[in-house]
Amino acid sequence: AEYVPPLLDRLSPGFPCPWVRGCEHAPGLRVVLPTARKLNLPWGPVETSWHNYAKAESNAVGDADALEETRARIGLILREEVARLGGAGGRVFLGGLSQGCTAALDVYLREARVLGLGGFIGGVG
Image 1 (spheres, one colour):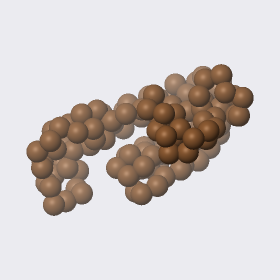
Image 2: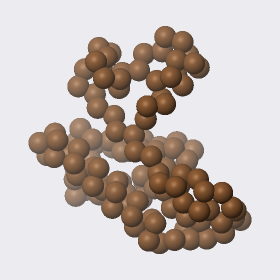
Image 3: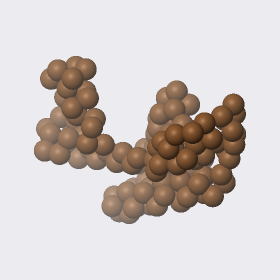
Image 4: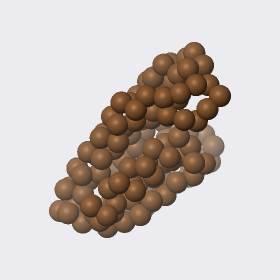
């Protein structure tokens, strides 16, 4: 998450980052940006990934344990954020991009009703 403000500043100088600590643009806004862990992918390199793939030519999940670990990790983050807000799950939104979008949507569909989450934001999923 620490790379986001410098990247935005390079792409759009002076762009306000409301999630930066001490910023006055969106008081009370808290953004949590976890990073996927590094996994050995079937096409060779070790890269950050929310789950492993069955093979290079497929989007099918190849390692159910890695997916379960991702579900548990994101679920824990959600429960901690809802608790931080005194149970106000409607103030918590979950989202992701690309593979993170599908992983986040998977967790959202499992947890939203239980935690009373506010919504989902996803892109390139």
